[in-house]
Image (cartoon, rainbow, N blue to C red; front, side, top):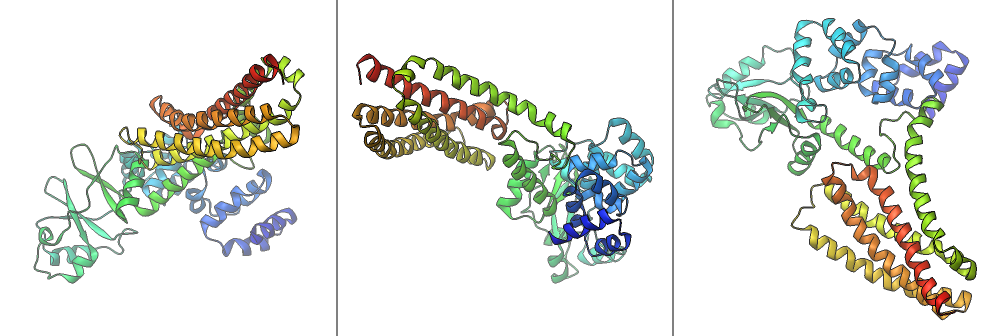
Length: 443
């Protein structure tokens, strides 16, 4: 990002004219990306020179919380008033309860009521995603009445592709597309032209399920209703893109025990604290694997070649297990895995593991025989490889399913547990077979 380097240099040199020139060329979302890419001192300097209320919606949570710490409530309220409802709600949910109340009291009444309605719902639900800026028409209106109604507005809400249709009690009935409104006879009623193909989304549906629904049905927008079927908002495709990106970041970062909102340039002590817990968990699993190796200390002393070949078994099991684990976690995220097809998936993955196990067992066994001149050693490592790949596939399927039943995120905990399983089983199988066939019965 050449402009990032230019801004960094301008900040270091204190060149205000150059900073202002560069900022005028950027969209607020690009400025947010740059702020997230700067070390703390340069970030704070640049933050004082940007239109903060316009940039705030695009910052990730960790950076936004840091930069909002010293902002007065009135300024936060002004920023929230200029945002779309879902973005404003995201901003407020980063604040303490006391600060939220103070910010809301600084808002104009119309904005206060708009946000209060959405703040009632959890952040990761359809209600938390929805916007309340949409247009509503009644089923008994004629199209000419709708057109007259629309002419009263200076502009339509952003991303308006359809008008929401409700009955006299504000229950959702369907949608009237702008295209149908313009191409049908003005004498027809909304009821005669509207579409009922788009089903309303319950406000308590999870954000993940909403994203799947948009993907499967190619929605640009969709209505949101409460438990009584009353229309309360709409979700647009840009809101869903944010959910998809957040889930992708979560899966990527979660595999390393990190939060997707972690600030890359956070203070050293804060980053150290955030990562320490995960390192501690991994240390515990490493000691478990070391303990298993320690059980076969006498075997390793007698047959030094085992120490050379031992990492191969654990490594192959880890890779095979990770492949299965990734497939299963993805299938769960897309809701493609059910109780009915899980047995088939398990059988398939076990069959694949056995086939790959036999193929690579032969390769590794031949290399071991040629390397160390021991047929028994070759057969032992080949057998251990088959055992570990089979157990890795079994673990790769069962671990995420069990974690989901326990309400634990498989993307976060699955990798650590799998690594422990493949290391322990790999070492135990290889060293156990070696103890029986090389030490007890002689090499």
